[in-house]
Length: 241
Image 1 (cartoon, helix red, strand yellow):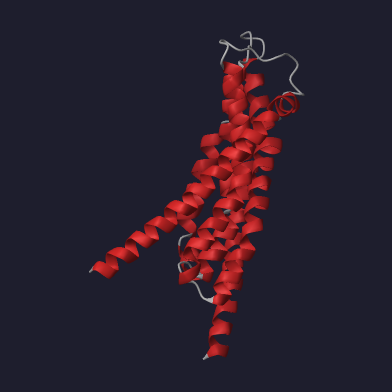
Image 2 (spheres, helix red, strand yellow):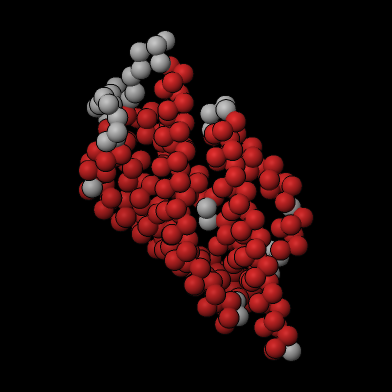
């Protein structure tokens, strides 16, 4: 009993260590990004005809914090993944360790790709739709806080959704998922992705299609990758046997 308790405390201490390292990396990245928040802000609002409005002296501070936070998340993702890898490494086989470590750079790349898709494709499309709705009816006045919260809500979720292929590959590698399960869950996954697309896009068919199709392709691509990893895993197991 005492040995089990020591084993549990050892795991908890290791987990605490990994979480602390991740949080420190996030804070350092956020502070570094905050130093460049003003030029980043100017670049993000470069296409706006008018300057944004603030309603209080701290509004611009929170905007800079939001901008810095997104960049800090992008930097922290590979750090968090590395720390998670160190934590689960003792429970993985040597081949699984190498494979999992190789997935970490892809996490950062796919997160950036998802943010890019949200910002360059979805955000201007939705903003243009809403501007056209308000044209000639009301005076439009955007506050910096609401503008960037709106941008964040349309871009950040795609950063995480685009991680799907790498997560599926890793979970397939360690035996949690397989292509059969993913194929069986296709209807539920499709329905969930369609609901997400409809919720975050303007209420028109074209916008829904432009967002839904990439997400469905991403899911099918994840299944294909899962099949590849699964076949490779079975071949390795057969050779070892």
